[in-house]
Length: 408
Ligand SMILES: [Zn+2]
Ligand SMILES: [Zn+2]
Image 1 (cartoon, rainbow, N blue to C red):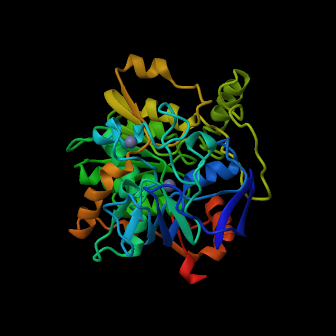
Image 2: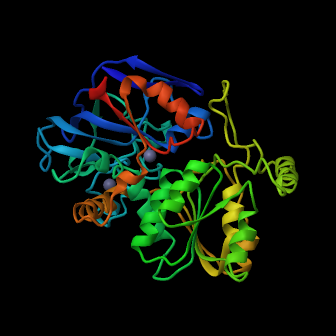
Image 3: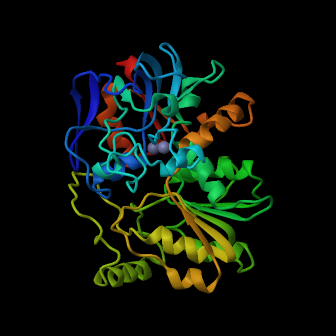
């Protein structure tokens, strides 16, 4: 079968690989009908998230139809149309039972202190094969698969695998209450979905920060007030719009692949800051273990702590700053003093997808939420490498890419 395979940093290929087989009694095999490329996949290919093993199939977002089940799968049946939760969780340990699927004690083969297990990730996350393929093996199928009602389209459902659960989790982590002023750093798919989830939780004004015109345009369409960080200092802008108070709730939806401004008045200040941080071993490229840029592709961000420092700076006194952008363990930088001196609450972590997807399915079924406004591209799985490159270059309009094996 065809699959997108990681061979090394900056080296991914569409390969013919052997089809997956049931390995445990709790497994299922799913024929993938839709998968998607995520910013997290780009971190892995650019090398900003290290530790990927060669020959790992990429991808952690999918929908499909169940083809086979193990002898101990009870809830899921052959023929079920399902969404795959991006994180792999057992459903039976004490953490899963408490709804803290992100902390599952059993799913990660590295042990109970291991990172949240997910498909197509580095060794620390369990070395599971990913979902950008024609078929996939799904561990703990009763918990990692969720049945889809017929009223939900494939295009809606693919965004419930990771993007919207993560966004909803981020909005909850940020403790958004009715009327709050919210600032969201990053208008990629998760940032845009976070705008919609903040609105569901009753946010008042929402500021959205990015620099890619098509992303800012989408954020504006969704009702956010947009700030281009290459046109003005986003912290100054947020303070100016809020009588110098800042935003009540701030969300980092960027993560480690942040870029510093490359134009505008504050370019010099940022460049100086970047050099300073770099010389202290904190910022610049110091977290990068390996990179392999080729032409316009696979360039790591040049300011890994940028979203963190802007985010804390933009938060009002006694506000909440929440981090859903991804940072590898080697990042040790955080603007602690600024957070401490304004009594800011800081929350962060990986999403317990299983907790949110059933609620999101209800919201879509009831017509309260339409995730498809984020989905801009549909390509065949066989065009995956070109789609990766276009998404990586942030080409105009390439906000979220769905890949369909059946189109191949
Ligand atoms: Zn994802
Ligand atoms: Zn568990």
